[in-house]
Length: 529
Image 1 (cartoon, one colour):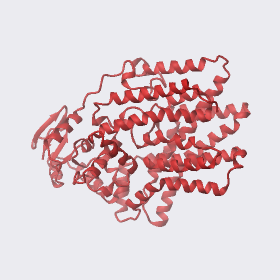
Image 2 (cartoon, one colour):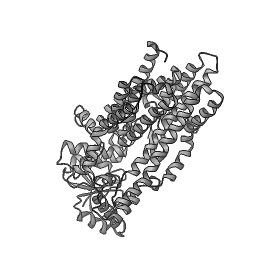
Image 3 (cartoon, helix red, strand yellow):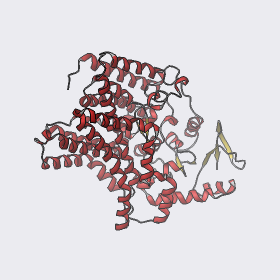
Image 4 (tube, one colour):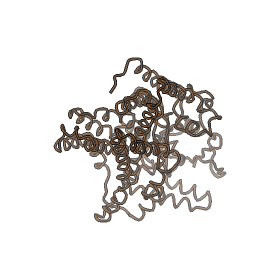
């Protein structure tokens, strides 16, 4: 690998530090509604740890045992940061975002450079990788505004580190194994995909490059597996200590609730696989196929092409097998494992070998162009286009008008960016509820209100997903309540049912004359029950 001079390293650092700091400054006055729904589910968990007396009547945070299994590394990291933001969790996410933005761009650049060994290609792809890429199962890759700072983002920001340690020196590889297991704890689903890729890559490297096998052996491979196991052990102990596969509830009722909450493609591997053939994912799959075709002409890259193709196929195939395998185990042992709908999401890491294939293709193409400054010019022009990517004139331009380009730069570095975001009605309503109600009050309303107000919320579907693994019996109860309330024909029946569950307030867009209107924000109304 060619050594990097200080100027080139400085360019990488300056760009990534600038993006990170500007994103942080742009979000100093961010609102709770700007967070993703996943984070809006996680923050109440952190708040419950901070104060166990909160959410006594909540749908899922009423009992910490319901949620202790859920990404404990992320939750506790967030709590640690919140100590420095006066427990303002929106700003805690903002600080975490600053850290992730710094790590993401810099670490992915160095990983790309390690394997591609072309500075400008590695720099260009590390910038593209920042953009939001929509993958099968509504998964995303990339890092952008606050809504993207989720557990998976922390994981993929740290992910290059163990791969940078892949080396002929076994001690480095062993340390990489411990780390790939340790960072798994931030987001086990993506983390399991990362472990699968790490182990598969090591095996394929040994297979395709016999010289590497001279310093390796089966006992060393077993040691590597044990090192990974050591890293993942905190989550394994927590998860299986806080969840149960024993069926102590109505399984038919659970399946009905599960089918109502989880889309069909998470339960059908063929439907999930079909999503890989969308236009935006094909943008990454096509370079992989192109690289394989180039390998037929350029025999020197044949091993790399085969390795990337096999790696991609394995990363897609093995997660797909989780669904039929789980059904087989549940049928044979009369259990109710509830993991395959999560495990199939591991497929998203298959985007990584495709990205490397894109980098290798660009390296090959530009190696045929003898003009030395053409590639730096391409990088410069691309960054300039990114500045204008949020403008309407690029909306219908493929790639440049898509999220993969529009989401890279923060608003303050973008020309024609929308005006600064103002609080939505839900944010203003949350502020009023927090100031004018008791912490023990129970509210029927959007899941957004839970963490924003620190009040118990009942009936919301987003919160119910936290119970699938944490408390399946309570999950089935949620579904029964939903069916009941959805079958009511009059508002009087709804109000009576909410009162039956000790709800004190109802946040809705409907007009309810028989209840006291306490406050309104836009179309939202707060009624006292």
